[in-house]
Image 1 (cartoon, rainbow, N blue to C red):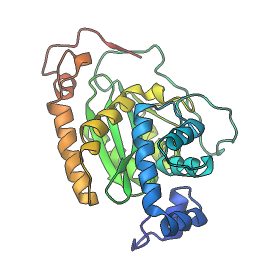
Image 2 (cartoon, rainbow, N blue to C red; image 1 turned 90 degrees about the vertical axis):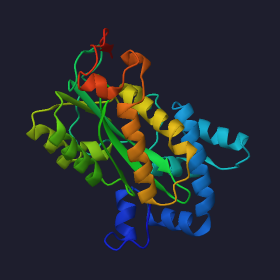
Image 3 (tube, rainbow, N blue to C red; image 1 turned 180 degrees about the vertical axis):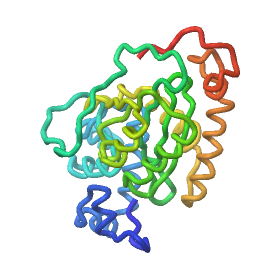
Length: 278
């Protein structure tokens, strides 16, 4: 979310971090900021329900809801939100050469103990006015959320700090991410390599490679975010902190034998009989 009054980060730098042209920012902020916010909230809800919707389908869906927008606007808004459809798409652009590619290591792997695999991702969180981004790191075996944080920008910094905080708590054998610039940055990769953690990356456009985090986002949004209208960032943080406490220690998961992630992660309940197959 661009904050024109930010004391330390200029609008120009914020636009760079969001991969947003300054002309697009001024167009959005000065002419129809509230309408674009409405569209982004609708896109977020529909994408949560139908993650296979790309720009064309999302545009058609919005038009059916009475919003006569074009694909250019929808593409721009989905880019700001960090969304893309789950289906593989043609490789129309070359990745930056400094970003090393890592294979997806989890196909057909049996996940049978905590800290075997962690995964992380970022999602859009709407507020009454504006929006923020949420990053979370989850243990695949137990679904335990090891660490999370929020930010007003998509800067890699808050992802790196969340990772460092998680690594003070424990350490996985494998970390799985998507190919977003936050997770392919030299600082993020370097933090993992320093700990000799294997790096796994989703195939481009394949959100289901990180299926457990996708399910986490649906739970967070349907059980918390969509039930409230956060007025301030501090309110959003407070509510999300309460939700993740509930998610980890109280929310029962059918796939965990109706245990909580905390019980499975810390082995405070009988072992899950069937390991999670990926």
